[in-house]
Amino acid sequence: MPKVERLSSHLARIYQAACLAEVEALKPGNVHIFADGHGMTVQDFMHSAEVSAPLIACPHLGLGERIFRSVEATRDAVGCNTNLGIILLCAPMIQAALLPQTATLMQRLLNVLQNTTQADAEFLFKAIQMANPAGLGQAEKHDVHQASDCTLLAAMQAAAHKDLIGLQYANGFGQIWQEGLPRYQAALARWERPAWAATSLYLYWLSHYPDSHIARKYGITVALKIQDEMRLHDQAFLALENPKHYFSRLLELDQSLKRRLINPGTSADLTVVTIFAHHCCHLLAR
Image 1: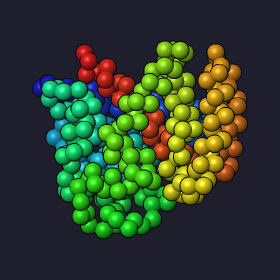
Image 2: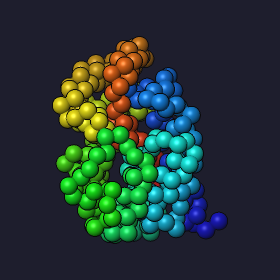
Image 3: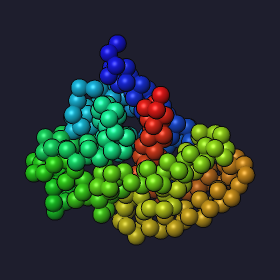
């Protein structure tokens, strides 16, 4: 098997592993192995990861088409939007990982982002229309319901002030490298349990940033209120030597959020890409 094909296979495997690791973590308000929610099941997410993995890691696709084909495969398999945010975040990192290793992954990712095209944006717009995320609405600039008139990066930069995924494109995934990875790796070292490390990471995102999915659906005021609520849980969780002691409290919080129809989907997406970045760095260091 050619080297790039082997690398593609490994990237597909660790992408799927990151998706499954996130589902295995207790994430209040989101879908996880302890509770389905919001009309979606754990099996939907597992199947989505399985069918999107070979396409998101395909070595022969550009960034925009990589996103579109992955979203299309998911739509055809489960009929709902389970992983648009995950795909949007992981696709450019995979694109970077497939480039010749003449620079760090972070530097290659910046190169990928800076060299997106209008054709990439056209694929992006079609992917978002297909997934039809909750609260999408209309935009004054670079509306996804219209033909693309900019590069993919420019479209994401235009959304960065209100969307954490767009913000990652705009700042070179700064929050992932500088905040997410240290939090996840510290939790792994402390508890030696990937599921609890993922829960800790999810609580970090939810307590440090207003969740974009919540903000799109209910407005920024509600998103900020949930962020404030999560700060107390994040602090209490970190204070424990054994995270299992917070298990019942997390389940209560999960039920409370779901009764309120609150789904912190963007925080879950950021959790996946951080775990994927962790695995990707280890893979490329071999």
